Structures are given as C-alpha cells and as structure tokens.
Length: 185
Image (tube, rainbow, N blue to C red):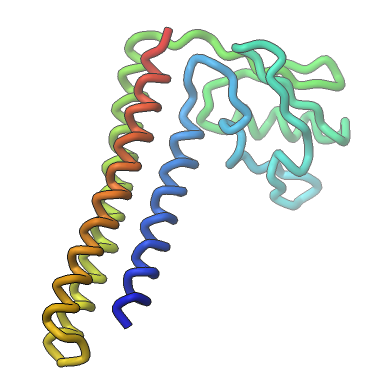
C-alpha cells in the first residue's frame, strides 16, 4: 500500500517536472530553438493542428529559425499563428520557407524573463510539495487507522521526503541552467 502511494507520488512529481521543462523550453532566449514553437497550434482548414505536424523546423543560423511547411497553402495560417502568439517575433516568408529572426535580448527583457522563469520554477516546487503533502496525509491516515505500523509510516515519510528533495533539486538545476542561458550574451 505504501509502495503504491510512493510510486504514485513519484509519477506525479515527475509530471510536474515535465510541465516545468516544457514551460522553460518555451521561454525565448537570444538564440533560436525549435522548442519555442512546440506549443504553437495552427488553424489548418478549421482544425487546430500542432506546428510539428504541418512543417519541419530547422536552425540555419544561431539567431534564425526556418519553418518548411509541407503544404505551401499553410504558410499564411502559420504566419498568422506566430503573429498571434506571445513570442514577439515577426515571420517573413519567400513563398516556400518562413524565417523567424531572433533579435538580441535587452538587459531589461533578460531580467523579466528570468523573473518569469523563477516564478514558473516556484510553481513547480509548490506542485511537488503539494504531492508530498497529500501522500503524507494518506500515510498518516493509514498509520492512524492501523493499516500500517508506525515504523513503516515513518520509513515511508522519510522516503517521501527523499523523493521531494530529489525533484525540488531537479527544478533548481533546471532553473540554474535556464537563468545562465538567459543571461548569456
């Protein structure tokens, strides 16, 4: 019973980390990265379609991203979706390829993005701690009801704390890497 609760806790904490990783990938730094467009959906003939299904992405230069649509008729829809997104980029196309040029970030914008990334990291830490709290309550309840011995309950709580510390450490590492990437000129 306790092992199952700990496995569920680990799975939920891992999902919180994955969400944070996706959000960090969506934060624009000074260089081009296809992960910035990962969550972008295009209105393609009335259906919301992920960009990866409509085009291939490449990075021909460090500050440029090229989008090669499989269907040239989708170029206008892709451009429209990029303009409507919060990326702050203006697409240009030559009829076959859409190019996104990434201007260098200002110092103020870097600070704003760093604040945003720290905020997202804190949300992830809170999510991990909430999972810990819920599982701890479950363990305490099982211990109180006599389903689990007190020694097993304490051992489970220690394991749960180790899991929590490990995942919070992962969030801190991801945050440090992203902050360094943002502050890189």
